[in-house]
Image 1: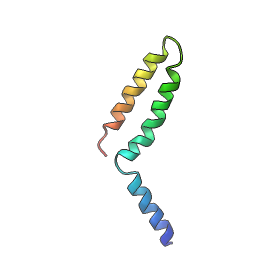
Image 2 (image 1 turned 60 degrees about the horizontal axis):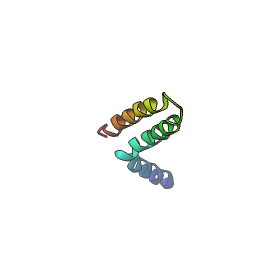
Image 3 (image 1 turned 45 degrees about the horizontal axis):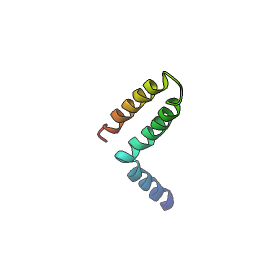
Length: 61
C-alpha cells in the first residue's frame, strides 16, 4: 500500500506546472511539424497549431 502512495505522490509532483503543459503541447507541435510538409496549406496550419501551443504553455498551473 505504501508503494502506491509513493507512486501517486511522485506522479502528482511530476504533473505539476510546466511538465503538464509540455505533455499537451509536445504532441501538438509534432503534429504541426508533420502538417507543415503539406504544400500551400501546411505552413498556415503549422502556424495556427504553434500559436495554440504557445497559449497552452502560458496557462498558469
